[in-house]
Amino acid sequence: MIRLYTTSDTDSLLELFRLNTPNSFAQSEEVDFKNYLEHELEDYFVYEEHASTPSNEIFINGCPIFDLL
Image (cartoon, rainbow, N blue to C red; front, side, top):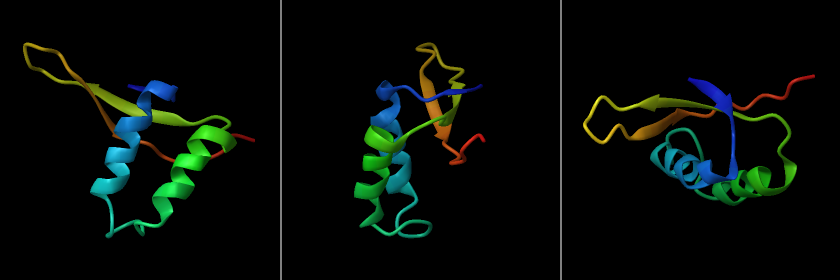
């Protein structure tokens, strides 16, 4: 499901960022990403999936960056 970002997603998004470092991002960019989430965010979306396990955990699997005009 694609939905709007909420501040409770921050830790999951930072973990995704770290999983893609250094292949897609430089480690130094994490500070910029966190600043973006905390101070510069407009419309930001996340993609989440519900696990098919007894606990029905929710995982954030993506966070495309684009601004809606």
